[in-house]
Image (spheres, rainbow, N blue to C red):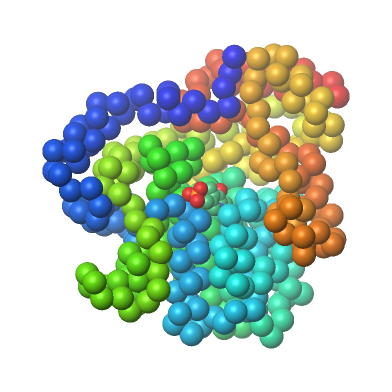
Amino acid sequence: MINFLSLKDVNARYRDELVAAATRVIDSGWFVHGKEHEAFEKEFSAWLGGGITVGVANGLDALTLVLRAWKQSGFLASGDEVIVPANTYIASILAVTENDLVPVLVEPDERTYNLDPCRLEAARTPRTRVVLPVHLYGQVADMPAIAAFASRHGLRVLEDCAQAHGAAIDGIRVGLWGDAAGFSFYPGKNLGALGDGGAVVTRDPSLADHLRALRNYGSHVKYQNRYQGPNSRLDEMQAAFLRVKLRHLDGENQCRRAVARRYLDGIRNPRVALPPDGSEAASHVWHLFVVRVESRDRFVGHLADSGIQTMIHYPVPPHLQACYPGLHGLDLPVTSAIHREVVSLPMSPVMGESDGQVVIDAVNAYRG
Ligand SMILES: *Cc1c(COP(=O)(O)O)cnc(C)c1O
């Protein structure tokens, strides 16, 4: 059986370091907002190559709290519009609606699955204030074009980096292209904690300062509250684990690229469309390796018969979710086709060459 992703195997390689980190936290007697958290924020910014990191409880909160801060500081008002890709994971859109803002769903570039800059102008209205690109599956969105569009119209850019830790264009990593960025450290992400975690990155010191209060009930100084805020803290245990995992992240992304390289070179089947090759430009960190097939059920069944586990990211597009009845009428043919046809092949930093070959052979043997 070839698993889609074994988190047990991923973390087993660092067991001693993780146990040492946990021991350090337990022995310190300090569990929330202490030395580990402070060190992780500094180390994450250093690894990224800039920006201020503000740890929060998860990736959804990272996105939600940036929009909330922009509302509280007067840049946004209820009913303002945020341009988002129509084919993202639903959390990107939940962050918008959670703030009483209006998501304007835009069809992706069918090749990269990312926000199509050519469609931005048509989506703009007098109420547009923010563009929220998602670097889906680990592939960088076209940030130079998106940033240029935003600055032309006085919009802010909030990057959803939950799937793309380490992806870059021209050496500038995602998280540093926008006005702010949200990262998730959910266990299955490229940088995964052993529980939940997230962070905002921004170059704007006043936003960072605002977020440090917001994540902690809106309080800058103990028992004094400038804002109404939630509790969204990254705890010491997860911060300590993340410091260990961060040291191995670039190496893990290289391993993911090697898996992707083998797939891209080895899969030759006219019924299976491959993703674009972003490995050379470092624009892709292969959170997922997603192919497209017309008769998806048969393809998934064929691979399962060969002992290969696959996943679908994602089976139902956000505009057809039960929680968004107001979006059901949207006509988004590209997004709908993508959701019908995508399949994620096994992808992990610990996947060996022989397992990769088994997948390649099974995909190439598929006859529809
Ligand atoms: C995982 C994910 C999120 C949310 O992160 P959590 O830490 O699970 O809250 C947001 N956006 C995208 C694209 C994601 O993949």
